[in-house]
Length: 443
Image (tube, rainbow, N blue to C red; front, side, top):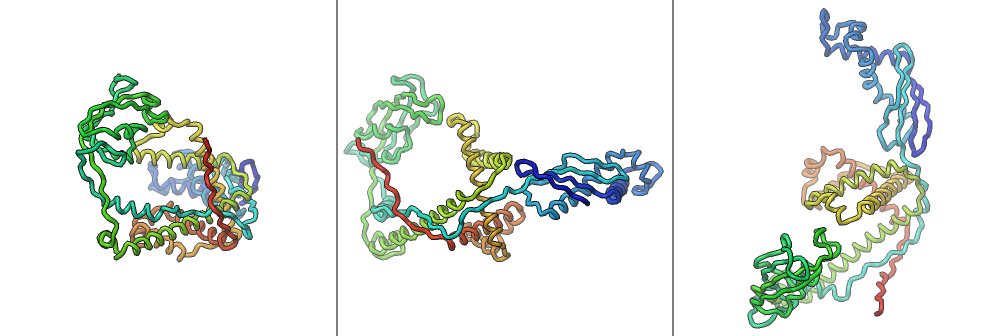
């Protein structure tokens, strides 16, 4: 077999393959024998009809097709391996010439991995913004715990406060005066947390100061980005009745409360544990920030020409993933593009695809240059990590996912990513700097 390569644009390689006449004839004769096994020819047992009879019965072109389908996978694989082509798509035949008794000529094309030129990826000093623990973080955590164990008590002798939970009847109408009823814009005995309302902006705030059993109207304006196209930016009037007012009563923070809701004995022990948790959380965020910033720096310094076809394939895959996530939320692509510009959304997906491809190519290039190998115990460790995350045994993980080739490939890629990350973090220096403070414009 003789193979001649020709590099075309966009990392496509054309392979001109010549298969000697002897091998081509053998492939043809093998095809005749296979076909004769499953056809019925009068006067002959299956598999015993002469070649000329089989040719008349099914046609020479059908035999050639059978021969090609049998021989090409091995021929193309051998051509790729012998020429050490790093392919990213399956090869496809663009033309062939197959006359029995002559050499078989096959022209196939395949897309190869773009060549990556790495910049410096060792000996760097990368500045990373340090994550901060807010001054009131411990108190906020304690307050959240108190809120989780709070009780609600009925209020009958005062007006609604902005920390109350009220039960209301409401009915909405489009317009600044009562016009057409809003579809789905009504409710009976609806509980509304004034301080944490997800209603239209300005709705909950107008309930503050009202009394039990009050009947009144409020005016609001739907946001310009509201999900219902017909209500975007529209004025509306809501009829409201206050049926019930409740206030949240927090338990007293003392040792008795701490012992009741936790494994600790004193308030000081609880606060110390919260402080430790927040510190560990910060250290984890700092570690991730450092890894991301170092990798980002390395990727930005790398040079690679990525073919548009490769970007388009990845973008199509990302779009399908996005559609599946939308479907899980009861949404469709069409619904989303009514509120978002479709061209902008597709542009964002394409940019994400380009970044993902470049990230992957840089990881593979570093792994190659560093001669990183994936061992059996690496995969076993990763499976154990997945099992721990999902509270499954390693055996259960393999039973549920092990037969999926994509899962196995994903495991290998994760291991490779981890090893490259470890090399980058071991060979580069990180300097944490204070987080940038957002400027507050003076009025």
